[in-house]
Image (cartoon, rainbow, N blue to C red; front, side):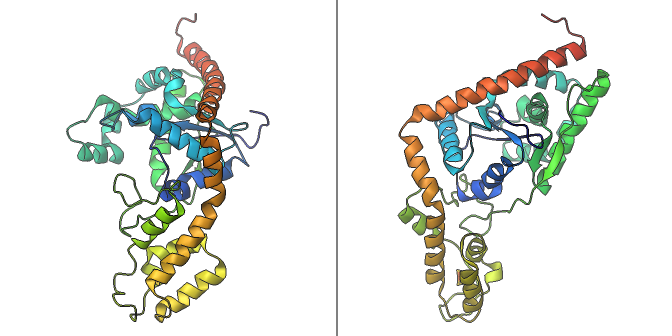
Length: 332
Ligand code: SF4
């Protein structure tokens, strides 16, 4: 890390493979912007993924594809640490220590645990219960000053803050840093069904690395104002997902035009979607070129991740030395 900025920022995401529009608008765009303000550490949390995945067959490839997307979109690996969670195993040790200052009842009461338990009643594993403790360990290990979170994730970060306080209190130390919440306006990006959050598992996503033709095909499948059945029916852009996307990817003039013409049936949904697809594809041109270039040398991505692992390990080793000393464990 070359220069110290406003502090250290940490965030992690599961290795979900090729990224989609929801990943970009909901997280990566913000990650890219945060690099201007903070020394950023971004972690591909493959250990977390093990709490819910049935098969690890694609874990490695998904890690590669996700890292490639992030780099092509604008994560700058010289200043930012990009690494894989499992490659810095100190996090599991800190997780163990933090688990001993965490009440079990608090963990099983968390809404996210209850939700996961509902989703996979056949696999309520121990890791699933301790998931927030591992998350706290991720953040505390790197002494992050800030963590970018949307409003709905605020309780998760509060849990981390409480855990850090419990540890520091229990061992009468200040070795762990209580991270601040960097509140972020994270838009809920709906899928092409116009109903649910965009997600690969629901197959309602628009993949960033798709071809322009594939992208246009997905856009043409987008559900619009359900009351607009015939071309001559006036529409309501305020309840249309295509219009929400225009607001992000189209020019002010185009947004104003759609806003007016939709309401008086001056523009049809097909034409409106074609315009959005054109603008989306234009927006993605630099990323797609970069992805194609970087993808010609797969070693590049692994080299970035290896370099990130070394830099993250240096911080982790130092923190764990301080943590073990604070606990009173015999030091090697
Ligand atoms: S014209 Fe555009 S904004 Fe209006 S309902 Fe159709 S797709 Fe949505």
